[in-house]
Every structure is written in C-alpha cells, then in structure tokens.
Image 1 (cartoon, rainbow, N blue to C red):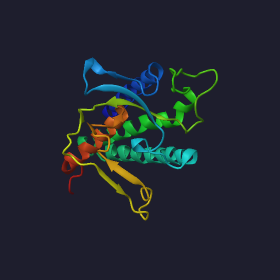
Image 2: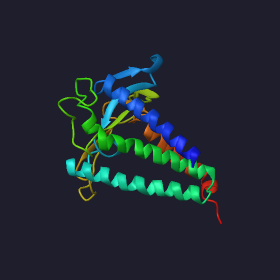
Image 3: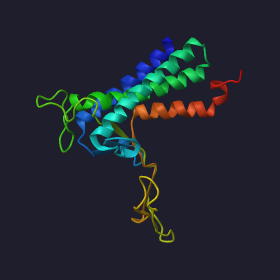
Image 4: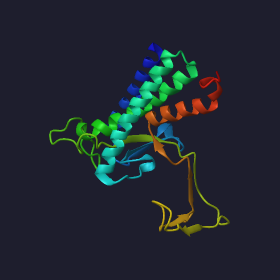
Length: 218
C-alpha cells in the first residue's frame, strides 16, 4: 500500500507541476523545441472534451464526461485497494496505480482548472485571477504539452491522395467527406499528451505485456 501511494503521489506531483508551469508560462498553441530537437517539443494545447480533442455534447456533455470520470476513478481506486488487500502480483498493483494516478491527474484539470485559471488565448494564464476563472466547476480543460513528431516530412508524389465520403448510416462519422494525404504532409507521432496520459498508457501496457503475471490462473 505504501509503495503504491508513493508512486501515485510522485506521478500526480510531476503531472500537476508540469501542467501548472505550462499553463502559466505558455500561451495557447505556443511551441518550443527541447534542446533544439525537431522530434521532441513542448506544444501547449488544451483538450476540451474527449480524447484527441473531440467534443461531446457541448457544456452538458463536458459535465457528463467529468462526472463519469469521477465515477470511473472510484472504480479504479476500489480495484487498486482490492488488489492490495488480496496481495495481487506487484505488476498488477503497479499498473493499476499508474492508471489511477493518470486518471486522477486529468480529472483534477477537468474539475478545478476552470475556476483556478483564466483563459490562455493570446495571454499567459494566472492562478486565481481577480476576474475569476475561464469556466465553472467541472468544466475545466485538460492541459497537454508533450509532442513527439518523430517523422515530419512531405510525401513523395507517387503516394496518391485518398478521399471518400462516409455513408450517412454510420453514427457520428456519417455524411462527411474525408481526405487523406491531401496536403501532402505526413507527421508521426502526432498526438499531444501529458504526464497523466503517459501513466495511463504505461499501466495499460503493463497489463497487456505481463497479463499472465497480472492475472494468474487459479
């Protein structure tokens, strides 16, 4: 229990310190190269809703997602407590601790950042501004900053443009036109993420790679 708690606290501290620093020292979309490297950059973005920056039903959808995450973090916390009580393998306890810490880190943003900070659009945000925050409780945005565009290049002419219309009967995506490689530019790895996301991905990866140790057959 003590080791799991220490791991969770360390991840939360690194996650929140990095987010608060970025939020108060960068304007939205500002980017710098770390040590001059093209493939490692700090790029300040804010996630308004679901993963990949998607939206979900406006303000009411954002509230639903935040409340859902609070319920989910309760379930993950119970899973961690149960695993420790049942003396589960350390791989499982470590993985669940990572997932719990990462989920909690992003929930803190969603719940409190809207009232703790003002907007970052064309200005540096300040902590507890006199005019109030940029959003009410439970409507905050998740701060992302880690960007690793390992491949950033123009595509050769022999790669064709791919475009298609999604059928109308497909939920959410239907009725839209999609174009791939239209601008002749290719980037890999494109997502911008944070320390909490890294903790969640690492925890899930441990469960997949070491699943036999994490979930031994009785």
